[in-house]
Amino acid sequence: MKAGNLKVVVLFIILVALTLGCAQNSGKSGKSEIPVSPSVKLNASYILKKMNEKCDSLRSYSMTVIRKVGRDENSTKVYQLYYYVFEKPNKTYLRDIKNGVLMVSNGKTIWVYNRQHNEVKVLDVNALTRGAREEYEMGLLKAFVNTFSRNYNSTYAGVVKENGRSFYLLNLKPHKRFTGGGNVSVYVSPDTWLPEKIVYRGYTMFGPIVTVTLIENVTLNPKVNESMFTFTVPSGAKVIYGTRSYTNVSEAQKHVNFTILVPKYAAGMKLDKILVSPENTVTLFYRNDSNSFIVLETPGNMTFRPLAERVKINGVTVQKGKTISGGHYFEFAKNGVTIYILSDNLNTSVLFEITRSMLE
Image (tube, rainbow, N blue to C red; front, side, top):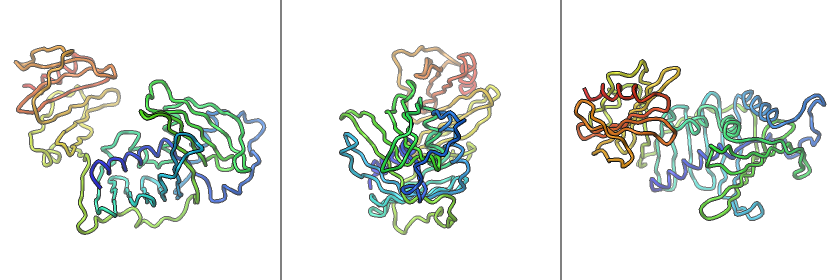
């Protein structure tokens, strides 16, 4: 498997959080009666709350997931079939039966192994984005509820029948700020408060797309063999490392071929973590309880930006401007490395002082 194909595998794992739910083993033959007190007013917020509580109550779970894709719901074909296990606080096992890929995480490291090509991609959980990291820190089900509660407007559409059983139907529409989402229908079991079918309807550059997720063979709170969450790289396997996370500069420095530059002034903030990418890019994260900023360092000359303002700081040309999210950035080059400092919540005067401290 090429590195690009491995990225696709990791991407599908990340996207599962947008379309995944679960059902109990007895789900298909469960009760159709709606077990809710007449005094309870059913609405989307209440159902999502009960789903969240159910996820919190689970110690572990396993399930088989079938995902189908097509132009419409009637033309979908199976493209993913995998067995998934999660154990709190943060252990994951995923075996993609259809594509021959194994993914194991012990809460800190993720191994994605393709048996056919004998290749392993090694990822650092702490180096992932928040949404992707949630899947490994709290499991797909909890990440599922968090994602839709955070990024979608939910509407309760009433009780519907599927294969002779009753479900609460939630219809979800993405917030305007969540530009990458389509509409989603979630079929929630009244017996378990967990989803059993999820239908995603969106658009790509090639036209409409529908993804249907079905959950089968679910066991709640099973006793899990801990050996599932350990992984030994097979003999002769090619290992591809993703972005890695470090807690101090001296450790990160061992993995790059340039000298990492650290600000002498950090506006009262402390270094939280350092990410080093396979492309030799270093990102330092500084934060306190209310503010944060990032220092991005990459080998090479600075690219001049037409819309940026240019100023001199300690005799060095510095570009400054606004980020896409409305924050501010300062950018300069030193010793053959481009330094990019940005923040969404610090004003330009503070960023100016941070930049100046790096040019002393």
